[in-house]
Image (tube, rainbow, N blue to C red):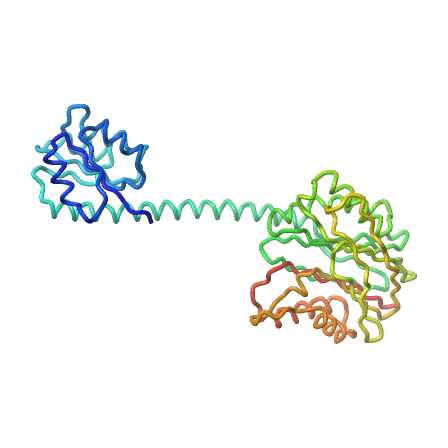
Length: 382
């Protein structure tokens, strides 16, 4: 806390000098010979914690001065000095001016010093309480905003995975903070048997990333209805982001479209980690790259063909998986993730996602997660 200052106000020079000697080498002291001069000093100086004012002054009384300081220095300690006792004046000072103590002249310097030091303790406590209240209000406001963001995110993320004929699909989603920037969505057309999957990662974290992801998710839902190929979905989404948001954020997205009956489809990617395909106990990556959405106009996105045979397992994940670190600073890299996938060939999709996430938690020793983690598994059973 900054050094506190004491302002003494008296129209008699001898009293000012005596007051100054009381606090010399202890606190900085500002001297004023009138109420008007005192107000000028208050406006010119910060950190005035105590005001000691004589009651009888020619331009204004001490009470009138202290009353005018209530808005300028609401937390200051106010002390009135007077050469006489007047109960009515005393009550007025206490009730209307927040006077800390009323001292009769001639005063005892030691008693005044002790009074001022107790007042300064009260002043510092008042400032700490005010700061605490401000912080409490700020946190309550932030908590309210987070609740709104969580509601938005709960609304945009699928409430459950679709029940697919011959397939299983499951997701593990864990934001690094109260709300996250990862997103995922599905669209299954029962008539055509076509399944579309997207998993994405918005740049940034917490509320801004979640809200930006909410806007993007709405755009994706409209693109799903057009039965576009994965590369076309990413191209159209990129064009929309560039036109509206001028690269204020970017989004990495992996898009998959697959005909469930034939098990044939395609994958396009715009900056997400490569998907993994587990077949016959071997894990391979579908290496398809692309520029994140919202960075480059007229970007195009290549596709790689995907074919899923009975028993195959497709894994899509955000980079929070491989970026997770242990207490020694080692990363849970792609090799560890692939090895863990390989060990889960016999499990159902929900068990796979849960086991993969649990393996990450064990690696990090349940430490703080630096990035959102999303793991999506699609398994073909027949």
